Amino acid sequence: MNKLFALTLFGAVLPLGALAEGVTLTVEGLRNDRGEVLVAVFDQAEAFDRLDFDKVVDFAEIPAHMGQVVHQFRALTSGPYAIFLFHDENSDQDLNFEGTTLLEGLGASGAANSGDDPDFSAASFPSGPVRIKVHYEE
Image (cartoon, rainbow, N blue to C red; front, side):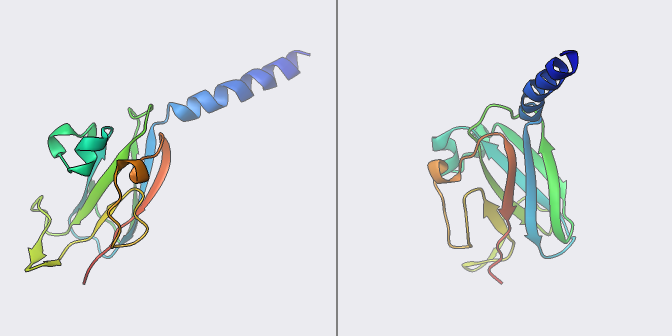
């Protein structure tokens, strides 16, 4: 009987521990190791929809690695959240263009391809794992 109680208690506690893990972001499709991936996490629809970076709930600057990088936001446990990110290949903390052509990759939660520009309701997700693909124009 004690084993059954312990297993039941363990099973009940495990999901709570998983929720306490926050947001695990996997960024996919990085084309090289140059620069950083700049990540802005929003918890307000208006701030995300306007990309008001003064109102981010969290931010990360992750060293780029060709292929993918993973980052843990442990404090983000009570979404919904939406993420906008870009691969800052030249480390100038600016999204660079040549004319109207985007020179660096970008991505957002809820964006299936490079043409997607999701609003907060389409981009938002609860805490937990999220995967975002970086899209490049060139």
